[in-house]
Length: 291
Image (cartoon, rainbow, N blue to C red; front, top):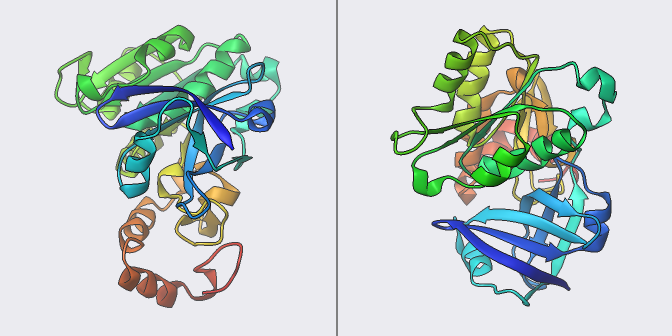
């Protein structure tokens, strides 16, 4: 059992929880995720790790209520317990393995859309702790939906906030901020974009024009989190991958976003799953290899 140590409503229907999970906190790295279940028969919910404290054993998760299971999660209180809190899962961010001196020479840009600020934060924090300052763009639809601004400001080299409706910070999409920064003379060696699939697609289309290598996290399409359900099947560079076991981070310029978003829509119904199974044959599933 895993105790909820802290709960906070960051914005409407977006919640943060600190959960006591000492073994996860001891070994997790930026980019990885956990799977939570509220009870023995509960739905498996994959969530990217937002933060961790190796001393207290706390792991921070952020989630948005989008279905019955996450709405039930939102009703949990401090002192309540998760039945399962499994992790760390997935591959850590590539830069964690890089030589620090080489990494310090790179100019990095992070782009977070909506709840994507949660998985971006631990990456920028890790860099900050290792003496590396990265620029960060955080975008949301409105000011009221903006999350983790103060936390991000504390670890980012430069923080640029933008809202779709212009209610706070800059006005417009994150892609416009990228254009503005480059027009102002900013130069970057790598971009990391995390957020809704459609946002990551258009960020990648733009950065490809600039020949700016871009990493994306495909955590939004994960369902089971073990590679067995087939929901997060994606084509990267012409090869079939599964976000939960091969990722969740990939070369954004190699991801077939249109295919991934189509699958995400079809996977919501039994008829859609049947269509995908017929179209994809032996590659429909991941770890189990069976339909």
